[in-house]
Length: 120
Image 1: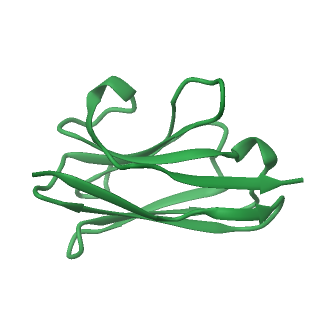
Image 2: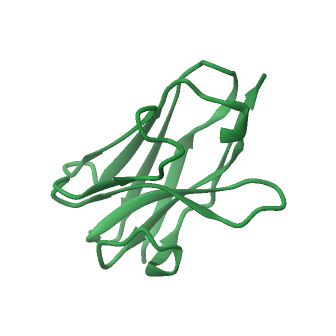
Image 3: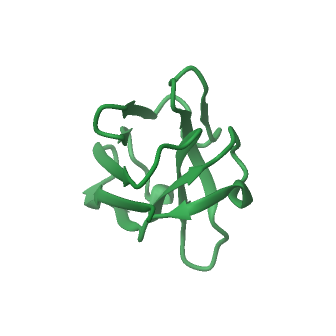
């Protein structure tokens, strides 16, 4: 059975940094990524990385501020978030896909989500 377990998140001030981690169990995936959902908004793509780490994608809104990485020995991915802004406030979800995609519908396995709140 596939399980994705996120850790990290919390309340920070604008300009601060925060790290998220996601541990996968049950199988390996072609791609793993992060999505986020703010209140009243649709879930949106943040970043994704392939198993080899040769394919990496970022949403334009986080480019230059967020860095995704992975540890295949631990089957985990990490998201380092720097220069956080109030508009980054959302529930962040870890997800896994069988193909390399940034489309939310391509991700069939999801974590429970972790709250990130950035105060101004």
